[in-house]
Image 1 (cartoon, rainbow, N blue to C red):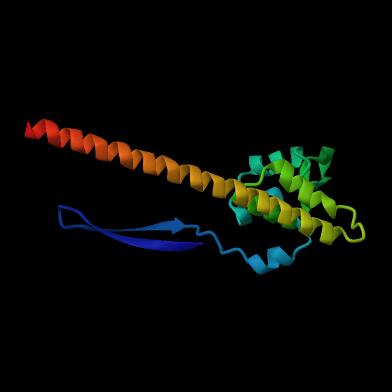
Image 2: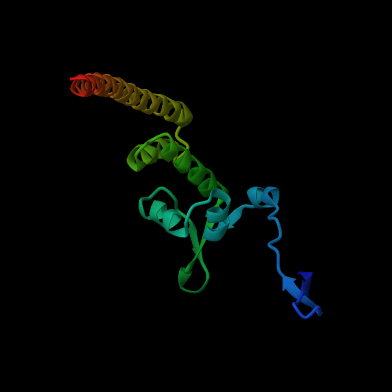
Amino acid sequence: MISLECIKLVRTGQILRFTIPIKLPMPADSTKKKNSSKFTIADLATEFDVTHRAIRFYEDQGLLAPERVGKNSQVRMYSGSDRTRLKLILRGKRLGFSLAEIKEILDINLYNKPGGSILQLERFIETLAKHRHALEQQMEDLKVLLDELSSHEMQCKKLLADKKAG
């Protein structure tokens, strides 16, 4: 807790001094948290800038499996592997993967099957190739649309010039 001392000049020439207590958030020691073995939903939400609701949704979809502790098992405690999975989920979403694709890739190595990481990488490469192809097709479709728009724009400009001229 720190205090901010303010001075205010009033029309009458008086000087007022007042102190405002300010509680600044202390910077989180992120290395301490990352090395911790357990995380709360608030820890993960803050670290990855997502809502608690999003994390609970990923849990409902079977992507995360936190341990339930406390009275009536109300408190979710996430493990280091849950934290890693959340990081991978968010990366997959950024790349345009569906939750089903993300789950399929993550679950390949769920039970540490022999060769699981190879299968996981192969599936990831397949999914990347599929998304790359879809994006390239979209780019081609957009190019065709832009060319068509340019053509219509040129025709309209010519018509407008002809009408103004004559």
